[in-house]
Image 1 (cartoon, rainbow, N blue to C red):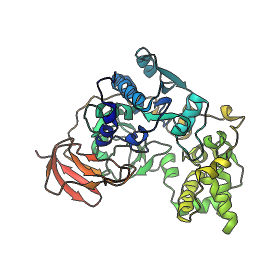
Image 2: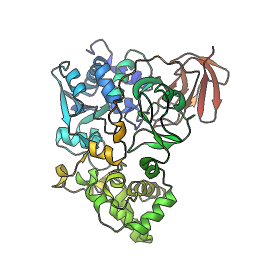
Image 3: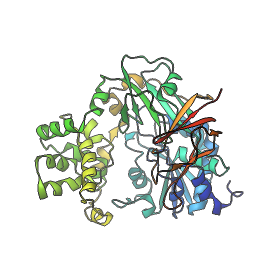
Image 4: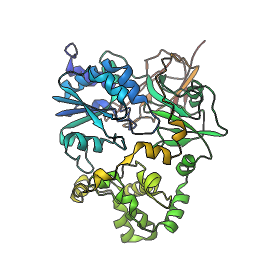
Length: 449
């Protein structure tokens, strides 16, 4: 499948094409491909309620997915490939099962959240745990999202990343999933789903559990965008996800009764990692050395939001308090080394398999059950927006600098920003053809009619 590709050049092709992790992190994929691995995991578990982009990839672009897997397996030396899909996605399983070569298998994941977390994936598939503070490569595993693998296959053919697979769902007439140009406005994306069916809508960008609440319909999708969930501003989920730091710290300080449910239900804690949200909540009541000692229990948090949106009986916000605490740990030079974290790791919790969070029950608790009856199926549409705004900050690594000037004309696929030669980084490409305008930290392209 990959015999015609010069493997020595594949890493450079992937870098030049601007391929990043499409699962949300935006980590440059060429860096992962330089590590050796025994196993490649294609992550199609798709944890977030209502999203359907990974299933669309599997069902509509299976040939490119398998080609991308073959290329990465050859590059990394992996002899075994595994595609992780939740059991409930029988359409995806049925479609791809008969297409698998002998060295690639399916892993049917339970219908739990967050089954697609790479720490969960690696443990479920290999029985090994990624070291605390470490990466899958530390246990001989490479993990790539299924969309990323399609982009790798295309990069091998010289095709840069100019579009992202994205699901639109919630308060819209016709939920859908489609490949859309990077930099397209939320309003333009959502309009493809028909009318908005609620008053005063806002958008959760990325997913109900881990996405970000955005009320600016002029915001733009990025290479890491996976979903736009349209909801009423006064809905339960939006209100929970919109608390300010002052609010969630004040309420947490006064309301936490240290029941420990946030910790006992934490997926990373159940895997034995040194994360204990209830101790981080306790740190709100203390200062000095005591507070510092409690705060370090936030560092291993993966921000999945189980503690806040599922476990806490008081509707407090341990997740965002952990996020704020991690920021403060770094700022105050209290960040622990991977070795220190690993020294605090425990055995896998004996009750782990009984404390999974069922996806269907989670969807109901989030107030999203009314939308769950409609699947955001593939919409094969060619969209040519009149304007895109491409952020220079949408990916991990060193920020690229524009290589175009205001007034320049570009064609779709042209490089418009490039990273410094030294360090980790990737270029950005024009997602449409048109005229460039530089505006602060973004590059605007207006189509010329």
